[in-house]
Length: 139
Image 1 (cartoon, rainbow, N blue to C red):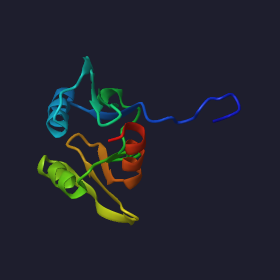
Image 2 (cartoon, rainbow, N blue to C red):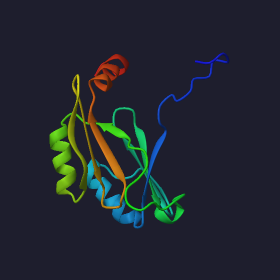
Image 3 (spheres, one colour):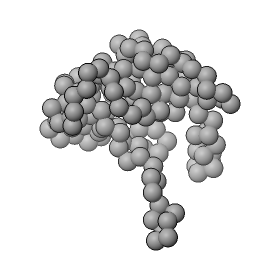
Image 4 (cartoon, rainbow, N blue to C red):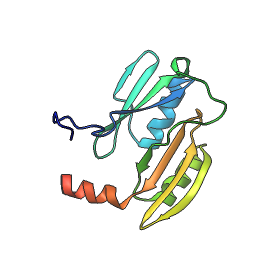
């Protein structure tokens, strides 16, 4: 907290991915997540995901601020309870391995894929996530 009582980076509000075919991305992510988008407008859809109902937005690629060659950008690591199973599911749905499952020590394991639309999707088994979840929600 700073001197004025304002907290920086309280949590992410929306993770934005881009796709040239938003409806195809909606179908793919709906299958992956087991839910449909809760919000839509032309060129944009949004899912509520996980324990904290984080937002995952899919934006028409024509609105992307840049067009890098190949996958690029920050990697958001989504906590998963079963990293090997989640990684295999992503691959079976047409995602391409970007980083194989990697043990980072002390119970942390990460992996990432490139979804069919060119976005990097990171997954992670994170013991700290589970500790915070237990404290906050009793789950």
